[in-house]
Image (cartoon, rainbow, N blue to C red; front, side, top):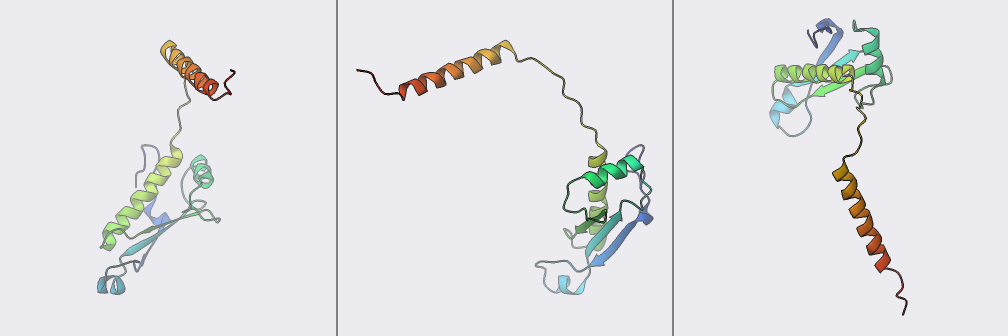
Length: 136
């Protein structure tokens, strides 16, 4: 399965289990195992080491202490849609971990923003000056 142009994920590395969904839904929820429990072991995966490191360092409640990502999908009524949803959420999580944030280009504040800031500052100072005791 293709995640990005350079990153591919093997479907056999995913552990998909069908479980009963929670919440309202009546007899269908009680009978049918339509929710999907996806487990993805980062250490045992075929991903590159730097991607594994980034995935292990993310602060997400879906990441266990053992380095396993657990995703529970129960949004849809059918098992197949929930399976697709769980895999898409895992792909999105991996894309998020591999995304490199651009460094901020240092800029100077514009003249207009400086004058606006100074105007607000003098206005605030005048307001504070009004709070002082009046000298008769």
